[in-house]
Length: 130
Length: 203
Image (cartoon, rainbow over all chains, first blue to last red; front, side):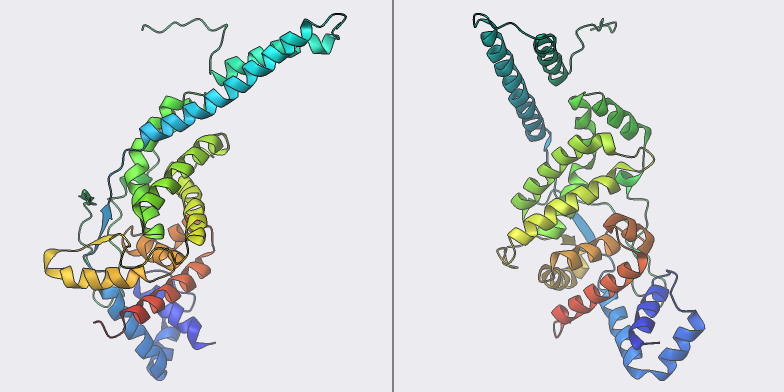
């Protein structure tokens, strides 16, 4: 087994985690390997520097910006659907433009998509007290 | 600028321990609560205002994590906003058995690392924001450690912060970073070695 594996295992053991190597094997290796012993000791000393350190939390209020961006996305889709609906209605004005059954459903689908973007159910009855 | 220091208890250190991370109770943001679940369900029904609850609950914690990776307040804010919008769009794929924040952290992390790659080398370590606060008696130690942290690559800084300041276990780190526990151990080991190199001669 390589020294590196013992070093990782010694680190895990020192931190109360389950090492990949049994503890007696780690201890036995450290007893005979000066380099690993020195390395483990150095890491322990560096680790001690974290004692008492706290994370600084920076306060932010992102909701107004997030809300704007969510609304912006909705507005984009809404505008696109309305333009598509208008274009489709304009093609309706072309003389002799008889529509197939499938094409007749296009405005219905576009309208449904507009309600979906607006998150509104046109058939929903509001039962909550306002 | 620095508004709040997380009210983490001082870590109690067992004799001989390398550096046992602080207690876990402070991580209120990580526990899965009924409120999170309700907010997520409402978001899925299309009520974007329900997302406000999640944003306001996790934004400060997420900002601290983004800052730990990016070391720049405005970049961290941009990455966090983008990550929140990504999360909103991906909520339909969120597994309700999981906690929200670890799931969101993956999205945030990806955004931060992408931005860090684009910005690589642009933030001088002298301009980087502070992410550590220590006790008054320990101020010098905090400054030395803070400076050494600033010179680490983002991934190394991230894993050290999650381990030592958030107190995540190896298993939690593995889940949070999407890597096996063995990889957590080696990343942590090499991050500490890099930190030790940066600290060389300053202690």
